[in-house]
Length: 256
Image (cartoon, rainbow, N blue to C red):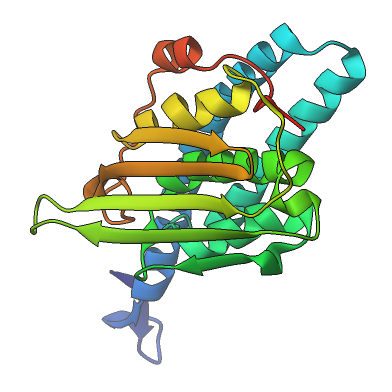
């Protein structure tokens, strides 16, 4: 792309005897305009997607909140968790974020993040995976800060992920495991967090989620096709009706 400026060339008596033409390369300006338009469309799409998730969060949290104050606190915390993932995507031009960045961002508000060890291959998550795994990590960290390792001075959390299988059929596996945390006497089921971890987050990446717990902590295992998590392949379609069907409850439900 070029910008052309054409001006008449006149002789001493004012007659036009020719033309002067200047061509300027405007490739960089056009590329910047295209990039801005693409980013604006991307932001618009992502924000609409997040609105759907927030609406579901508000509706389902309200069903089991016992007081207005509890409802307000839980909704605020979950929206803030979404905003942390959103910040990562903005800083990365909506191309994605690494698992390490996402885990650290979601765990940092609870403190004691130094007690979380992470290991696995370098992998940049797609924006869709960042959003839903961010929700999952928030629910895990929230539960741990209330009843698990992040609530006391004992125990550790290990987060490990790996990629297995042949090219074109590679599988991603991530395991969050709490060890030697405070002893849990009673375990509840069916809360918001468990639904997110067992159904919502896994479904968003076409995978499966297994949530297990014993008296000293929880273990969450996510298994999904690598193509559904990598930044190079981003599946953005979210079935709102399906999301509404699987989102229920408001708490992880583990009581000390």
